[in-house]
Length: 217
Length: 307
Image 1: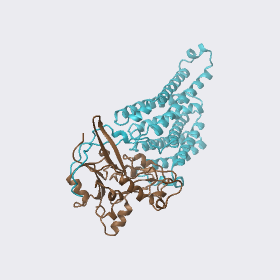
Image 2: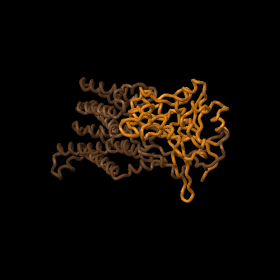
Image 3: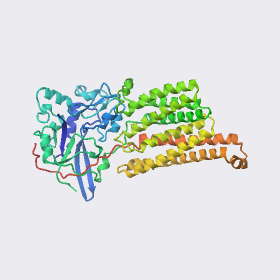
Image 4: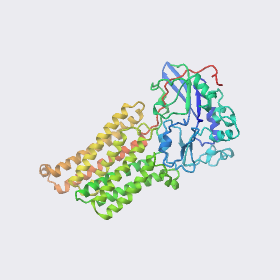
């Protein structure tokens, strides 16, 4: 059984936000909406402080709270673990936004574009631009994955079948792939490194792993 | 695969990711207000009906408030013309269940008012409490909002609804001993539920912003209003049943006038307080969860093997 997951190597992320920009460019999300965010956190107490960059977004949980609460069944879980939103079913009640422990969902209630009231040509051509009044979030670029796998490509190995943020990452911090593929990049990374997941105690079984080795503080 | 490291250690600075939710506004608060007060009114109507007291105004106003609350939330959703999709997920969604139960409460309440018998009113009240329970579970299932997802929120929403309805019933129906007793009991239950909820919230890490809202001057005044309202209702109940001559004669007031007025003022204070606290709970004290990193990794590493 395939389960796609994302891995962020926190030792390597430099907080450049290229993944964020690639996501916005590729998915046409409106101003103020970022499906792939990089949190810039300060930790510790002066003078023992440290800075950590944490790429985040939808964790594509195995037990997603958003799916449980969605009254319209718009939020769905694919067999490969990707959580999707059916645009034609969502009523825009925002309940999934309240249920997500990772603050990964957004909703805009009126059209917003980067340069005024009308979309640029690029925005008009992107899927996220028309998502007004419904919840939206990172899809792991499910469309690219589906198109790529249909051509025999392997997500996480072949760029045309891999999420845009992973392709764009300049430091090699982001990886993607099928965690059940034991020889794949994701399973190898997780086998060879220490990792954690966010809000582990929630029991959501996130599909987003964070690699680390030594503590800064 | 390596073992996950121990979680739960908190680091300074990790709370910076928490922010006030901005998607559920006064319209959503209106749904919780309408649903709670409406349910409380229908419950008060059932108590009145069972004891032979007038109940029609409370019953109909209760049904109207539930419907108004749902109408408000309909105005809030992004795709109102798809509203019927809300019924698609009864297996796990409390919002779907809320809609289904409301679909039974509203027509049954109208029928109960027309039939004018106690039994349908009591059945409607039972369903209405089920509706309010669904509303409470909606908040409980909102796991991204620490101020809502607590177990104690269920009792708080139930008790608050009954207290609001009991208080409002004193304004719309003649204040009988049963109505005063219901309002006082529900108000005391709400006070107790609030204390339990607040204590639980205070025990949870990362809820300082919500606690600050509940410690604000507005919140303190609202809580004082609630206590004042309860005191008035209690005094009215005592005056109406035990010590009317002692209380009333020295100030030369007719008990037939002063008792209902005190009851109405007390009920109004309880209602105003509880509505205000619900608005704070939904729109002001609802912050998203702070990101909690179990470790702060050191940056800079050799290239990962898989790259």
